[in-house]
Image (cartoon, rainbow, N blue to C red; front, top):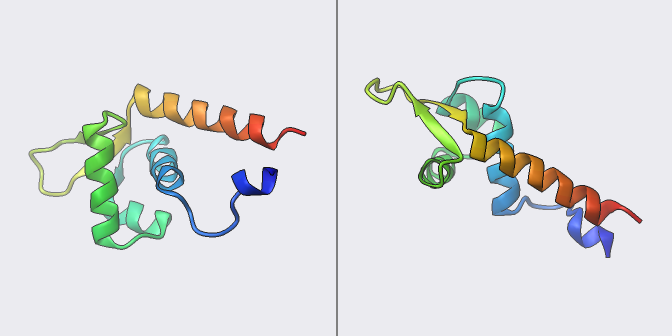
Length: 93
């Protein structure tokens, strides 16, 4: 049963969102850096960025500039903590 929750194949939408938030926790990050580090194409990344910003998990830094940069919000960091706790509970034997 634990193998089901510790999926070794493709990432779920939630895992991708968590990966993006993790990458943005250490400071501001550009969408191009996120694309490279999260291993997504531009269209996929834009979908996730739009969703995470609307959900208040990420915020746009300097939105009047054409080069958007993103950083995690307290709500996004809470999601990371909660996700990690759930993974620990599911992985425990």
